[in-house]
Length: 372
Image 1: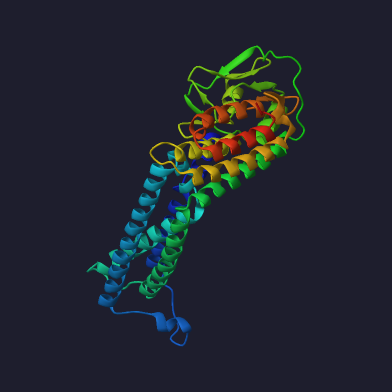
Image 2: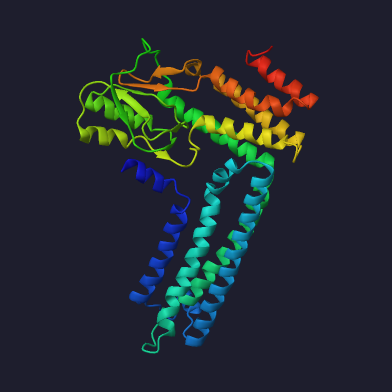
């Protein structure tokens, strides 16, 4: 239940759907509730009572906003296609997750739904009554959509630049590390290497998302459970792979509640700090592939990569492969040495032919204690 709720809250369709439902509710309330407007009020100048005029305005709004929405989709698809071709397809979830794009889509879709619903009673031959402010309010929404479209063009043109994309990867990764540190600051080194005897498999294949460790700690303390999370967040786990081991004899109900804190999905989780390192490495590798050969983009990716490595070095728990967050919860980590090995093994074959990038990569290795 918790994993499903979290998936809904993180869905890119949530904000547009909520906004569209709000506009639909506004239209239904206008149809169902007659709002009296005094003749001497300011709103009286916005009242449109001619049925044909209201129909024309609503039809114009539907056609105009629908055209803007299609044009917006076309721009987004072009941006995504450019990023897939030149940088990395792994960056697509990062671009789609931007909230302002979802707000523009939700407001535009909501305006279309608003006009469509109001067009039904106005077009009906069985009634002559319709909301007096329906057309004026629709025009107001359409004007906002135009300004949002201008803002949308600005943000999309900005997101085309690779430096902006790389900075977003850097900012997100830094925030993820800071957020994780809140539950990891009081870590301890576990005594012994053996996990607990009892094992639990989730029965799903996919990428393990970052658990909410604060809530997991609270639940384990409440139920007096000691567990050890074996795979690290962001790792692909097989269907029968052991997710965690635990002490004691837990009922099926408690195990079901415990499993809700671990989400496994086909998408690589953006909330895991190591995902940001993976994205930067992929951009650098793709930029130096023979088909593209863009040393400037690779250098920018390495700049952010080196800065993130320095930030990660400041957290002492990354020196270990496994740590105890509390007496109850032990988890696996991607240690700094293991991360460096993964990243440089991927980078070196593609960057070794460029003398400047090769020297810069050696400089990064030297600063992280890996100089040859």
